[in-house]
Image (tube, rainbow, N blue to C red; front, side, top):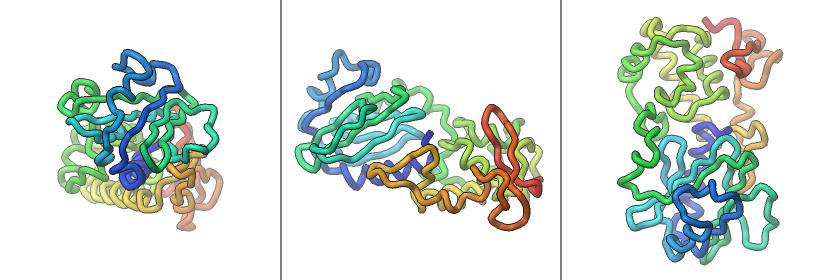
Length: 276
């Protein structure tokens, strides 16, 4: 499943690749549940044919293609969806669910083996009504940087363990097991430390670890675990910088100890014994 650095990479690539392109048609191949709000599979083409994508933005983990008239085409990729830039003549993958054709420069294809992605045409002023969960989103370390003191204030309001807190979308947007484990390792903190019991020095370390880890992951275009790739089919480069995730039994890159594993909250947690 994409985490924040991977989705931000997709957003930036889309903004460069399809920003300024005019939509010709939208071919809905998957089930109608893919396009909630449309009466039939031709509805999006009727609504958007001839519209130009001015930019691609992001609200939390939702991609928003700005299509004019105060509207966005909002794509929720879900746990298994991906977007692929393709030429009209390229072979179509069996899990292709939707194709946006442009008047020039090929297509944008939504591929989703889980068939849980959705594509919704929304009036921008009604975003919160259509996606009420966005009102509960926590801070976004890419789009909404906050000071360490603000972060500390929010942290001290939470009487919960650090790892599930980092993966709580109401606290911070877009983190899953990969970056939560990397952040905790960088901050030298155990997964089961209680958030509102951290001392000032530990809060600073955690804040710095979040900012630096996410910044570096975006810089290297995220990770390619589970076969993930960008819109060009290229894998991210951050895998080689992972300190602990997926490296159980290996020596930590800093040479201070071995990477250990434990089952935490239904997923494998990677850590080192010098995290306290």
